[in-house]
Amino acid sequence: MTLAGKVAIVTGSGRGLGLAYAKALAAAGASVVVNDVDRATVDAAVAEVKNSVGVTAAVGDAESADSLVRAAVDAFGRLDVLVTNAGILRDRVLWKMTDDDFDEVVRVHLRGTFTCARAAAIRMREQGEGGRIILISSPAGQRGNFGQTNYAAAKAGIAAMARTWAMELARAEITVNAVVPVAATAMTRTIPAFAPLIEESERTGEPLPAWVRRDEGLGSVDDVTGLVVFLASDAARDITGQAIGVGGDRLALWAHPQEKTVAFRDGGWSASAIAAGWASGIGQELEGYGIPAPKPPAA
Ligand SMILES: NC(=O)c1ccc[n+]([C@@H]2O[C@H](COP(=O)([O-])OP(=O)(O)OC[C@H]3O[C@@H](n4cnc5c(N)ncnc54)[C@H](O)[C@@H]3O)[C@@H](O)[C@H]2O)c1
Image 1: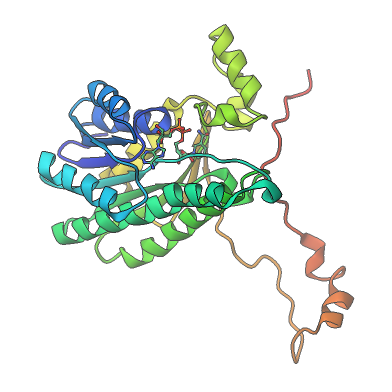
Image 2 (image 1 turned 120 degrees about the vertical axis):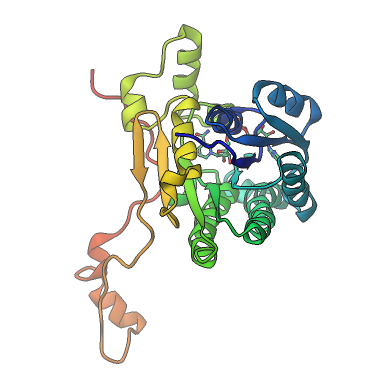
């Protein structure tokens, strides 16, 4: 699959998944703008990603987004692909979460995705040759996750923006999809359920066990890059508005929220009418929530 002649921006590509996306896009022939918050990390990434230039900037504001698009155009003459990958965690339960914890996470993930996608969409529409906007969501945004008020809200918002922008940018032939990745990185090492599995694999040098790769969809960063390269390519020109999960041996299409069970009552639903009909009506099929804890298979 070739991306020859295409120009991509990957935010937060100094390490982890972002660096893996940048390398994979470059390996497929794209020119790449790498980005992270500190100069040394960016310089190291530029040295690793062939055909790349670096921009040191914290995504979140319009100026950083504009500087990324400007770098793509100045260095390579155009912009075809944006991957909004930059992210941070500030996990705490609701009653301990500070305003700063909330604002910082929303700023990088949600506002960073919005400002970068807006700058990219403006440039891609001017070029008039379509484009690919690949947003990075998370299982936490799809299901909710303990301790992640800020992050789950931002990642759910990102999936919602993908669906909205898929509509708005369809005429310009710009596709917008949300990738829902899972991979062993510095970020996942902070999640208690995954930390021991990742540490064990690092200690022994063995790959993560087959059940982790298959049931939990947790593998290495390189397991996630194929989906990003595919979505960036001409082969994915008709795929838009989707939330697609990938990790380990798993590739998954996430359902979009929709009405699952509906009940009607002439004149509408008073509180007592809802109470009377709940258990025999829509209350029979309540939804689960939260990311289930990893379950090793019985020995
Ligand atoms: N690792 C997973 O399993 C997983 C699961 C779901 C979603 N994600 C998402 O994938 C993305 C990458 O995650 P990762 O695991 O590689 O994390 P990571 O912490 O290893 O890498 C994130 C990178 O983003 C950079 N960054 C942070 N704030 C930035 C900003 N304002 N501007 C530019 N760069 C910034 C960091 O410096 C870091 O290099 C994140 O959006 C994350 O939420 C990861």
